[in-house]
Length: 380
Image (cartoon, rainbow, N blue to C red; front, side, top):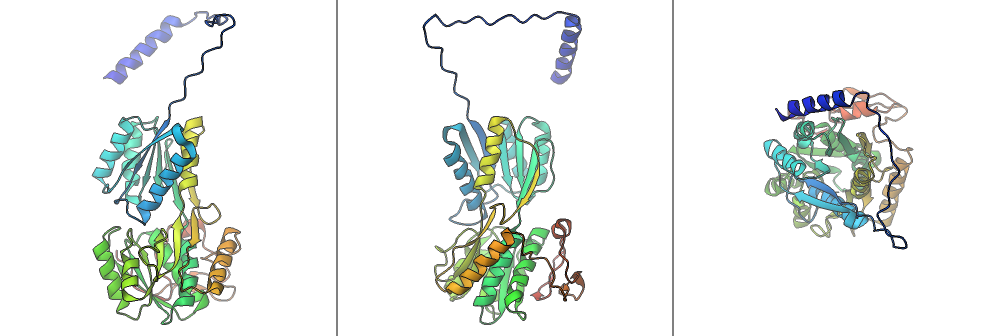
């Protein structure tokens, strides 16, 4: 009703003013002669909201995004005011929280979880003047940008380290859901391992949840009982790393450095670095240059970094991994490129990357297979 009334009033005003002549008069100074002009009013800080899918723990997915939020505060100081809501379930709860942030004056809202994509788009339709950042989403709108990282680049590098460190040649992988992002990680990790140990195998357990520390730990223990001596995972807590420490095994940290949870177990960490991206996007809102877009960045863009080696990793292995990281950043190494003479096959024997060729971004984003060397199936 109010929208129609406002439209009618605008039409009436336009009609009444049609043909009118407007004259611009010179501004009259209100400052007495010899007095200093008043200082301009300070700009209001940008209000930035963040929605987290799990609690903020000492390490993990949510921790890295909260570190990104803190980086925004450190960079912009009084020019920004941040708000976060943690442990928000995907779905109706997410929509309610996102809508509340939009309704309370937040000019930009970051929603870092794949299941937040649709609720973000729905709320964005009702708040066209608010900017939204769908992190790990892929759909965009005029006021919704999407951003994701090439996590698989870090996974390949971690696979090199795991391949060098494993004595059994058998790795485990605790995985959340069989979405393309997770499949990319499993496959890249396996290819990284097999680049230094062609006989390496990776055993996968699906737990169908992102954050459930007891379930993550149980899955890790099952795998450790199957000749696995090094573990990777795509879940939200430090439970797998802690399990490796408990069992005297090794693990690759994901999202964050997890040496506090596994001081002896951690061999390397694949960390996500969101601070620069978040700061740039808030600054763009501040200066009026924000535009929707869809970024998929990795090592080269600074979103993915591999390092934080554990004490068991020899210097030669560290140097090998860091050299490979540099090559990926320079575009000289592509995890999903087949060798000149041998194609890459999936674990059912089908050719998925022809010899000498690399997958396109579109093919990587639609990945729905597990590479040769992975012992597991995709749950559908």
